[in-house]
Image 1 (cartoon, rainbow, N blue to C red):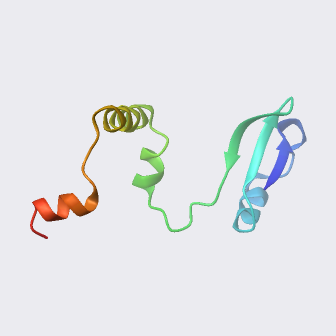
Image 2: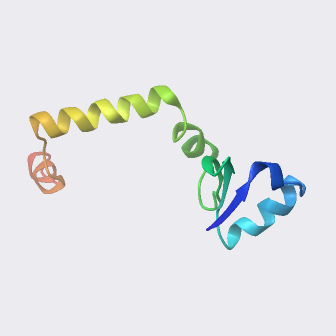
Image 3: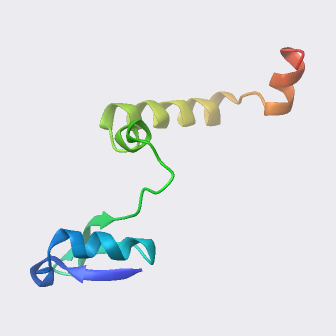
Length: 84
């Protein structure tokens, strides 16, 4: 993984994008990560959009918290109940 201080990121964006097949690039400000450039090969636009949408992420976190608190069904149990 490549780390790059934003102040030093002077190349065109296209140049950084070409290198993403090898490794992600983490952009930092004063040494702290602020953004990541990652390849989205094999992903569609909907997946990428949802994976960063605050309301969708909040929904996932609520679901995880509920499953942890109340439990849930294993995939095996779900298949059994659905007669699959």
